Length: 427
Ligand code: CMC
Image 1 (tube, rainbow, N blue to C red):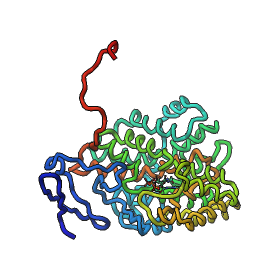
Image 2: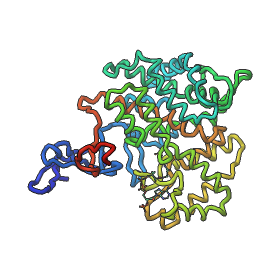
Image 3: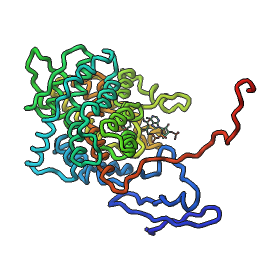
Image 4: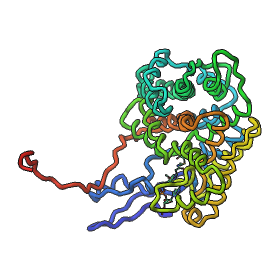
C-alpha cells in the first residue's frame, strides 16, 4: 500500500499521508486539506471518516469481529466479568488477581450517592422515563462531586471515572425505584457489582434479597456486551463534549442523551415493544413487508448496523443467554419464538440479504431483561450503565492525547448569501 494518497483539485495536485493502524483500513490524513486547497471534505454521518485515533476497541464489521484491547468479545463474555472488562478498557491490560481485587474494591467504595441526590429525584414526575431521569441526575453529578472535575489532573480524571462506573447502578436502580414508588435501597458492598444492582433494583427493605447466581451472571454478561463499541454515536458525543474541556459528568450526561435515540441504545426498548406488538409468528410477514416498504417509516428494530455487515457477535451471545435465563427462571416467554422466527425469515429475505441486515445487540437483549423483571423503559438505562465504562475510557484516552483539539466539524453552507436587513414595515 502506498504511503501517500494523491488528490486532484482544480488547479493543483496535492498529496496526503496514508496512516496505518495495527489492523483495519488505512486512513488518509487530510488535516492539511483546507489550508492547501481551501476545500473541505463532505461526509454527513461520518460514513468514511475516522474522527480520532484509538487503542481501545476494534470492529471488523464484514467479519463480525469485536475486540476490546485485542480480546474477542466472545471470550470476554464467556470467561471474564464486567469488573475485569472495565479494568481492561480503562487500563489497557487484563488485571492480575490483586489488581482486580483492588479495582473492584475501589469501585465498591464509590457506589453510594450524595444523600442530597435522593431529594433531587423527588423533583421528577413518578412516570418520568428512567432515561430522562438518568440524563438529569448524571448531569447533576458535577454539582456534587466538584472535587473531581479538573480534567488536567489525571488523578481527578481517574476518580471521576471510578465514581461514574460505581454510581451508575445506584442511579439507575433509584430511577426504577422512584417510578414504582418503592423506597431507595443503599448499596450493599459485600455483593458483586451486578448483584448489588439487582438487589438495589428488585430488593425491598422489609425482606432479605437473594441474588440468583444465573441471573447475576447473565446480567453481568449483558453489561460486558455493552461495555464499549468504538466510535458509535454516543461515544462520539462524549468525545465531542469532552473536547471543549467540559467536565466528565457533563460529558457522560451528553452520551446518555444521545444513547436514548431509537436508532442507537433506545433500540432495545423499541425491539421488545415491536416483538410484543407482532405477538404471533403468523404476523411476522406483515412486519417484514412494512420494513421493506419505502413509504412506511417502520424498520425492524434490533436489525441492521452501520458497521456490521455480518452477524453482530454480541447478538450471538445474547441469543444463547436467553435460553440460560429462561431455564434458570423457568419462564418461556412466547416473544422469544417470535424473535427467532422473525430472524430466520428476515435472514432469508432478499431485501435483508442484499442490504446485509443482521440482528444486532439490541434484538435479543430485551427478551432477557424482560424475563429478569425489568420493564422495557429500563432497558436503555441498563445499556447506559454498562456503556459508561466505554465512555469514560474513551474520554480519558482523548484527554490524555497531547494532540487533542476541540471537535469542530465544517459544513457545506446552502443558506442565503449575505443580504441587507429590511425593517419590518417594509417587508
Ligand atoms: N429495517 C429495515 N430496513 C433497514 C433497517 C432495518 N432495521 N436498517 C437499515 N435498513 C435499510 C435502510 O432503509 C437503507 O435502505 P436503502 O439503502 O434502500 O435506503 C439501508 O438498509 C441502509 O440503512 P441506513 O439507515 O442508511 O444505514 P445506517 O448505517 O445509517 O443505519 C442503523 C444503521 C442501525 C441506524 C439502522 O440499521 C437502523 O435504523 N436499525 C434499526 C435500529 C437499531 O436496531 N439500532 C441499534 C443499532 S446497534 C446498537 C446501538 O448502536 O446502540
